Length: 163
Image (cartoon, rainbow, N blue to C red; front, top):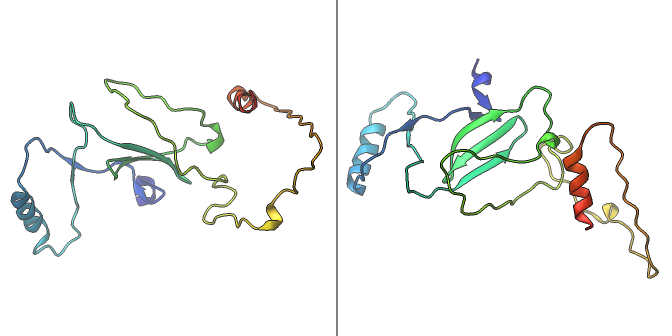
């Protein structure tokens, strides 16, 4: 089934070619022309493998509605469907393993609401969603966490937010 080979309409694994040598721009143009000219069928594009010893790369990990998506240097590389019964709230961290030096980690474009709440639309931020203004007097704040399961990471995140 084609549906089993994709996650959020992205293929599970892209095709790569070996790219050891430095091709000149002219050779690259000739290569593209020979691949594209005269083709009547759909053309598959094979990208050079993005990882090489000593070369820097940017890896982007994003969470979609059906699974995780990995992009390297702006190109989609692979997608992984969520495990059966998995919800996005179950994710508590990321683990990297292997011979890799992480220079920086940057989290951005985090959703303001969970995809299951508003899958294809953004919540309209109007005045009716705003909380009333705080009074001028002292405000006492109590934060309580009631959980039926073992949600240690979530409880610690809330606890650290006021420490």
